[in-house]
Image (cartoon, rainbow, N blue to C red; front, side, top):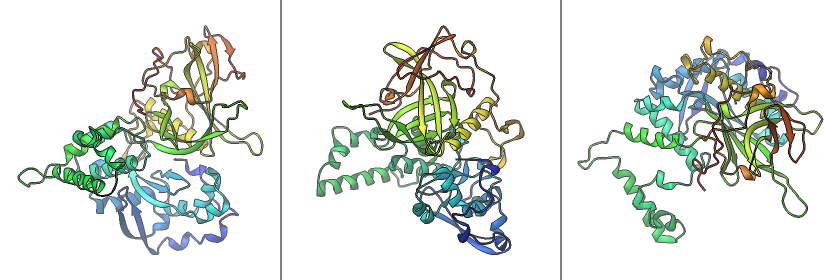
Length: 439
């Protein structure tokens, strides 16, 4: 998602050298640039010196035509997005240079074929920053800023990026009750068209008062965002990965399941990409994590998530392996979010999203060596964990007896205590519920 400048390749690779021209030639040249918004509209800019312009400088040029006030400079960030990869740029990144290195980034962070990589082209988007706390959104009173946030949230729901089956949260009650809208979707022809027209009329009716005057939209936009805030994965950056399927059938065949991993300032969420189910959700103080590099050719990068669970009535530690070439990015983002949260500001940033000196990450989360005694006594978890489908995960389980002795459960594996943990956990009793993820 984000990476330090040193993490990005700085020299052309053999894969894409022939497709690159001189960046220096663009320093003084006037160039056109299209910056896309979540609403699929775009801002057309004509800029001089684009080749050496940072994202922070470019942001000033975009905010002016959008009438975004200076008080909202931290709300949005630039993203490079394509079907293969999504990256949020830091204020110091140079969009023009990174765009010319896109193929190198795809080779590094995706498993796409050479042919797909050669045909992939990113779009430059201006959308919500993953580091902007959602609690601050409801304090925004600028209609234009709220509309941009609304458009992005709405599109994420319609496209299934924010899986949500409770249509009654987004449609009038009389439309969804008694079969209404849902049953009509299963119907045919004229009745479906009639229902669509009725829904459009309902939408227009809330946009104007009885006397025809314009209704103030700010409370309505706040209400919609407040509804979206109940979705735990709202505001996440998303990554692609795979997890092991539980062994099934007489032959105990497993295989892997494609997942999306959402990471926000609050935690990590693993979503079944096909079924749009939340398989696992953890706050940062409810997990330990690590990133392992491939040990041999053909091996995968792995993001390890360690959390507390239950097996056969016994409290156990569980390890979930997420296979992904983006594990390095996920690891870095978790580390950065934990650092922001530990600063006490929960993602507060300076001008244009630049991290202020007191919040700047040192590159690695400062940790201490965790022995079993120091790590935790009894295995317990907070009730905010979203794990209504944890039974469908193929995890490695083990227990710590009295905080000292490790007892392994099948499948047997040497115990692993990660050196990275958000903070000393303050767990309450395990409560597996269906609270936040429905269906």
